[in-house]
Length: 265
Image 1 (cartoon, rainbow, N blue to C red):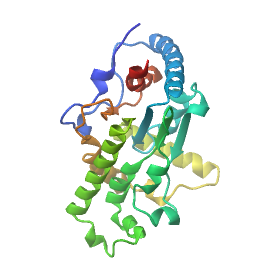
Image 2: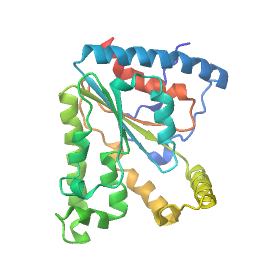
Image 3: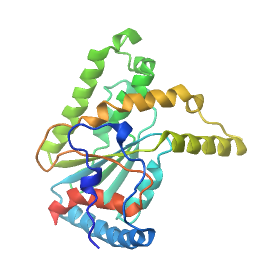
């Protein structure tokens, strides 16, 4: 079975997140997907070993998503079969005081994969132009800025440029950057968040109030439109791409991740 999903989910040119699919409506049946998944697991393991053995290139998977879109489960299913010695996952949460004492990209540089390795960013440098754009007061913790009035359009344009330059630098120095955005419909996201809140309340824990805010979720949707849709214009092996996938058989995710690895076979 040879199915190419890259054309369907690869972002080319202008892109609208509102029009992006939130689930797979193709012809692949569940049984076919499970069969393909087993094949791709083995391929990914073999390719990762070749990448590690070659030791001249690295792969960075930037995983960004709406809340409750399934980032953790994707990492578990997609990379569960690779050698853990050749793969490292970094989950970026609220920056520490030490991280805030540096520029917003500093901690991401520290987590980059070395040659021969696969690095996975669970959330990423895009948080600085997503959540922090919805709540610009968070940027004041960096201590460089005095007021939220400093966060004008020029400020955000500079951040976008910094991110593009960061990814361009990686691509020009042997790191293939694969950007995957897990898309989820508003209705499905609301359902999952409510389920999560109910589960937390049953166990006596609580989610941050921010996750209970409907305006917050709407603003995140709006903030996502711009930065993720404008990858750097680099036409060489390090070219970035973005996928909008959610609710697909895991095999589709393997296909997208295998593409940049094949050049090392």
